[in-house]
Length: 377
Ligand SMILES: [Zn+2]
Image (cartoon, rainbow, N blue to C red; front, side):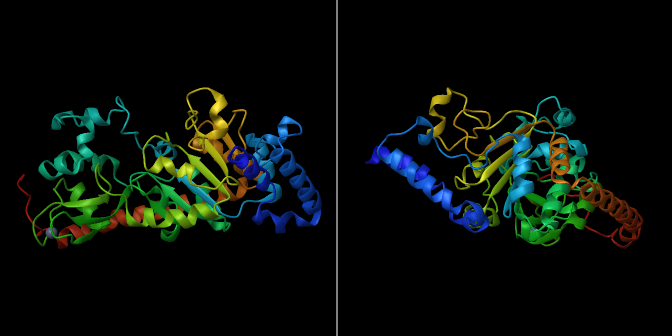
């Protein structure tokens, strides 16, 4: 019996609950008959071999096929999960890759190894290198990309269930993705806390400290104040863990963009949606697929299976994230809407920037009596 379990599951999935109402007008009868014949065939292990294969969630698992399906049938509960690749076109250096220049700039700090800069133990002893890096990467010096605004557009259209980002650059917020839709899995510069007494500091305060080349020091206990980004060895935010179960149960399209799918636990989000959820990868490199032979594919849900024989629901666009979302927008007839949103939002950001540039001088004058430079501890 257990041998047949998997085949039974595949057959039952032919008539998913959610799609019943949408498709009942023209295909309920045939689906049921088809479903029964497949169930019989797989239980008795008879019939053409193709009936034993898992049913494809969408008929054509190409990028174009996905766009056609989207236009005709729609997706209602979309989750986006993104990494550094959606921010590189904003000019944010990929600081993890050696040779990007960023680590070279940190040479004067003589880090024992590059990643020490994101280790809590090292930070407590020597916070200066981190803040030097923070100054270079600081949010506000960069604008959201086309890919960010595409996600915003999904939100405007009421299709975005949640946006999970690995990035700490806050471009997701800047693009107008609201707090309740946003999970910053690795934290962000948006809030900051004293590592001693936990007093909270806002982004404006932190920014002023960083750009004045002062070590951000707690006004309460004189300890260092750290942006709430997740360092190595720290737990991911509670909001991340609390959202997973509910979100991925409902999701009907998962869009994965600009990530290597190698940093866990974030990467494992790709494995969470049910078998009827379509997964679209938009990425320069063909990531996420099993590295060994294809015959095991059907038994392994840990990987994406685009362009593999047993693929039932994975689609890939291998290229830049901005290029991928633009292509998608074109296919969905949203190109003008997306471009309008981008130009309106960018104009708004430029105006805000001008206002902000005039402000700090007044604030600076009022707060010159702030704590003197901290001596290294
Ligand atoms: Zn404190």
